[in-house]
Image (cartoon, rainbow, N blue to C red):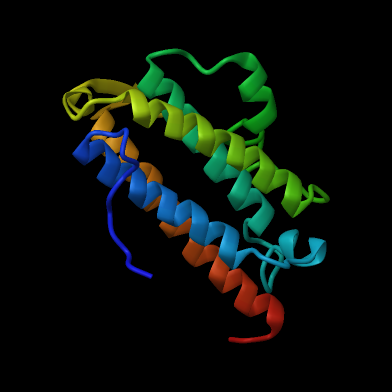
Length: 173
């Protein structure tokens, strides 16, 4: 198998490269969560104070669906806010998803990924220069190029948390 950062043939070169980084991370997420029990998915770390793997997967889907709609230059529809959100609960933590199956979480994330892919097909390399607003409390600005890179980077960041939770759950230090 040859690894490369080349997008689909119907994507422009830079869009394709960024898309492929997101795709690789999405595929890795599915791989590292394979055969996970519900108990492990809901595990909150050795002291019970950390975000569970389920919470992290839902969080990734929520952040990504927000970026899809920024790319589309549309507000996030209420139906998606209800399904994927909110970003934080009333205690300023990731919302709890205890009891939600891995299959449901990954199926929801798959829908987000397919929307993202569809948006990438329509983007040109020049479109990546467009500046959008993001953030929930302190609004910031970034290019779409940065946003797509952020989707990939954010996924890898939380995959490190997922891998650590899996080690702790299995009894490794």
